[in-house]
Length: 102
Image (cartoon, rainbow, N blue to C red; front, side, top):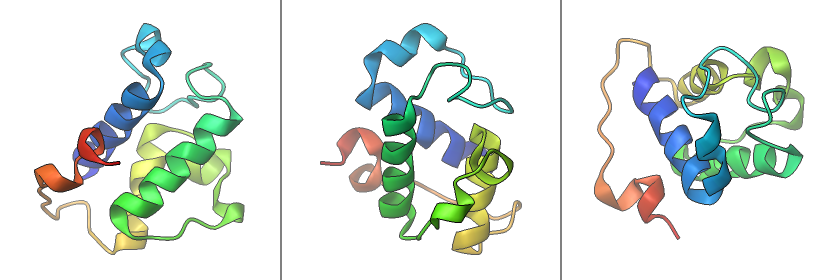
């Protein structure tokens, strides 16, 4: 599930910010904000996407470098909040794919 969450976040970023493609491949363990992939508004958009996509709430105090500072950390926090273990399986339906939302 972890990798699938990462891939959906990447798809969302690219879909909503085509200029981000010039930064591909995105680093998995580095801050996308510090790398210039996301600006502050982009971070807010990613938070909103994750909350809507996985029906979770990310608290303001969780939007930190330690908890939300990389793709892997975003996926880890998402898994933690959904209660899915790292070994759990997950399938994305076409209706919930980021490319198909809104």
